[in-house]
Length: 180
Image (cartoon, rainbow, N blue to C red):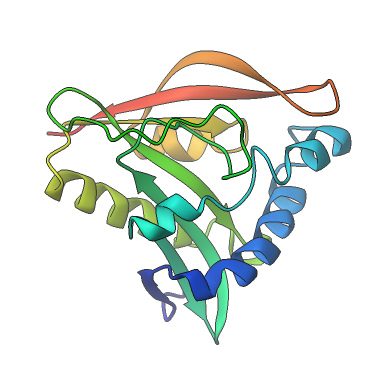
């Protein structure tokens, strides 16, 4: 497995590259699970950049050859998913002793899928979540992400339908993991 890529904390200078990666990832890796109309409606709202994660320094990118090939992060805030264009955001900070940290906004370039990039980002997130004092993690997985998170120890819970701007909805699965 090729691992000569570099993981680092994302900066505001990465936003344009992340904005290019997200639709490539969504269209390339979600097509077997969602219709084109669902994916297109979700781009920009459900699937998009959340600048708060970058400002909190809890968002990571993986670079190879000067290109961002993956991104993802975690949050100490109540919002479970969505870009900063999502209307039902709650940026209140979570209490590490009572609340679960959030895994957020993972997008991998399709050419780099299933090559360890997502797992490396997730491992970094879990390490920093532990260091921040959280005891558990929660996330909203797309249908294509459920198997990945399950292999990493996350347990599937409630299935939700996220309303989209075009009247359709996007099925997601709430998943959790207890940290030991």
